[in-house]
Image (cartoon, rainbow, N blue to C red; front, side, top):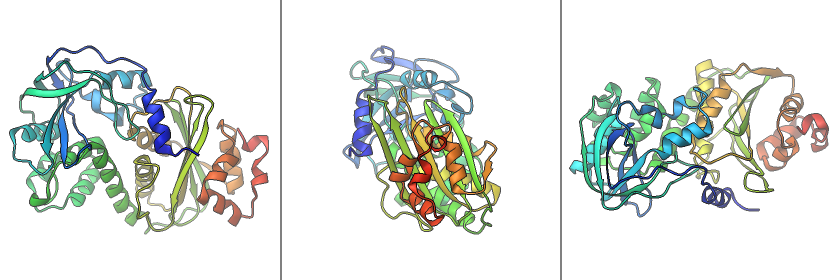
Length: 393
């Protein structure tokens, strides 16, 4: 069977839902604030701002935490993102002493949109969609870049000047203070955290997973001290052509993320799954950054509720789904965990309920999900118990 990475490359290659607006070689406007650090050719990377010819408050264009909770449509989100132009310049990830990097840090630490003027070496062109990071519009190399210095976020500023604070501690502290993960990630990526001599630029897609996994690890330490729940619970949420069901189990922490892609490209019906037991995974998940963003979102809720549970999350993506970055998973699961839970006596009744609203038969998730399959076997259920209409959706 095709792997998830190969499938998503096919999907993103076919994604042309909207064209970005035509851009001149020079634009004047605002950065949301936002920057992008590429991973190709690391440690020599293309880095630069994301700017738009719109002046004023453009923060909504790079504020994923408010899109799903604010009922933004997929078309609105893509519209925001394709309106952002990526300026880029090849730099060494360890060289933080240049004026250009200082400008990127100033943008990332800013509490509001930053006015910018950019001259490109050629007319910006193209678009970029990914399952790992949010999309953006045309790009081109920068010849000249000027910004007006913005007022910094106080919490991010404090971390920037604390050159004795390890980066992991900075990320966790900022999350505890309620700084949006997207802001933490951007500041982390431009080398504003960590002990002085260890600071460097971090490619955007790497920094997203680093922040999600770092926060999840610390939350897990808290959650493991909590009392285990005594019922089976299901939290559900649907948006942006996706259905989500979070199953909380009356067990110690264990975790499985299973996602299905149903006829998004054609007639495919693909299910991908990965899991971990009481101890976290030591190798990077083949499912990519969404594995860690989902884990973080569930642990965040359990820590807030001062509870412990095992968790199996099922997701199905339908025709019309477009890869827009792991924020999609993180924020959908966060919204699911904010919905009132339905309680069940056992795994069979919980799955039967999910099967009544999911399009994919639950048995397909069981076939692909090792933790789900083991859990069912331990409860003396069989696959045939989930072949009826109520368990198939």
